Length: 114
Image 1 (cartoon, helix red, strand yellow):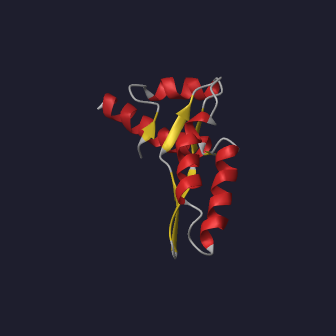
Image 2: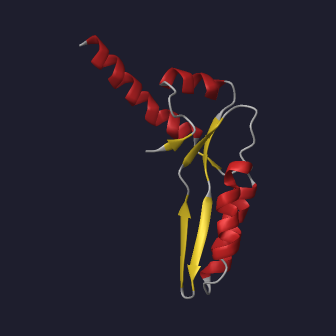
């Protein structure tokens, strides 16, 4: 899984930042093409402690505002749902990401011992 914002950080650094209040979030967006509507999720973004998650979601919010409304009937429905998630700062998936990083850290430790 590609996570934006943790490039060059070790698992220990990520864990420290999460303990300080950092979090992992993704945003929703919606694209409509007349009779077809697609609701998707952005890549996961790391938001350091003290930073706003609202700003990282603006590109996905603008994409939804411009491209999401046009499909009938799901365009307006999915657009509103996406905007609600994005205006709330995205969907927090910190617990899930940290759970995925635990096995990676254990495997790295085991490889270092062998």
